[in-house]
Length: 135
Picture (tube, rainbow, N blue to C red):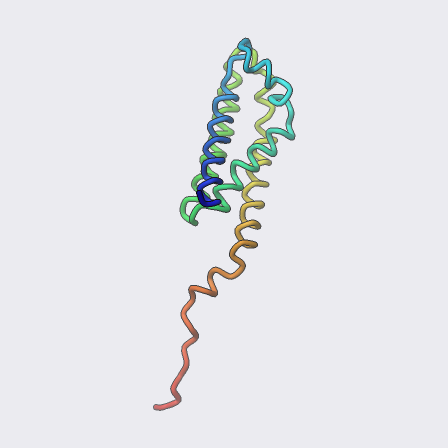
């Protein structure tokens, strides 16, 4: 399995985990196990930074920002939905660390991509036009 496929699998796992764990009811046993992490702003910041940095680094240009936009919309949607869920009043305060994590993930992903491919445009560009000097 290539490293890009492993990163894609990790991205789907993290995104699915964020979706499932953020919508757990407050009374069930899984939420009790993650309650310390659910209210930690650094955990939310790092989670969304990783979720956004992976597609920006791995996927092609037309998909990477679209997938990052999906993560931003996910943050906004989950933050607004959690206000209506019983027992989740304090979890809606995690929207700002999530959005800052998304911004940090885009910047991190762009830097990692630039480190991986330092001059992608120069390698694909046409050679400069040379005049033969004959008129």
